[in-house]
Structure formats: structure tokens, C-alpha cells
Length: 140
Image 1: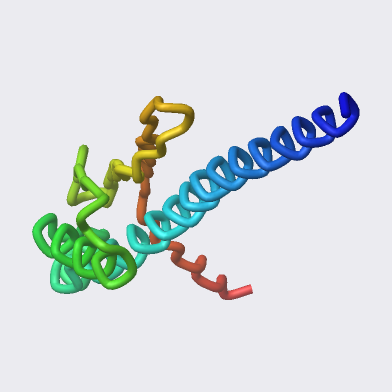
Image 2: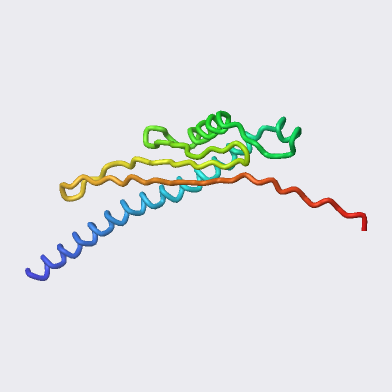
């Protein structure tokens, strides 16, 4: 009879460990996906916001601040639901193009053994847009 109770306790411990691992795995997977999404959306929004008239006139890259924010929010909203994210923009420089974006995600609350726990994840991305101009061929 004593060995049977030990077997039940080991099974319960295994189930508890599997549940905890599933909760942690879903949070870390979501964080990785959010980071790469923010990185790609930031790059695409910066390219969308390039002021081509300024580039043609002066030969330097410049982005439009409002167009960048609009494009970022539109592209980000196409891929996620906004009820769990808070977006903050820091240091948006138009020339040379540099942006800093912070996205905070509010995760679901988990109740474990009567304690309610939630994981709030913050991703920060700094991006600089560069222009790679090929060198002019010499006469040699």
C-alpha cells in the first residue's frame, strides 16, 4: 500500500512539472516571436517613411516621423491583437534615420496553487537606416 502512494505522488509531481514547463515555454516562445516581429516591422516602417524628395535634393536619407509611426502601428496591428500590447516610441531622429521602439506585452494571468502570476515582457529595439552607396569606378 505504501508503494502505491509513492507512485501517485510521483505521477502528480510529473504532471505539475509538465504544466509549469508548458507555461514557461509559451511565454518564452511568445517573447521570441514578438522580438523578431518588432525588428522586421521597424525595418519595413523605416523604409516606408523615407523622404525621397529630400534624398533626391540633398543625397542624404531622411525619414518622416509621422509616416514612420503610422506605418509601424499599421504593420504591427496586422500581425497581433492590440489588447495585450503597449507601444512607445523613443528617440525618433529624422536625419540620420534612427528610431527606438519599446513594446510591452501584457500576458495572461496564471493561477498556480492559489497565487496569481503574470509575465509582462518588454522588448526594446533600436534601429538605424543606412544607405550603402557603391563606390564609383575609377578610370583605371
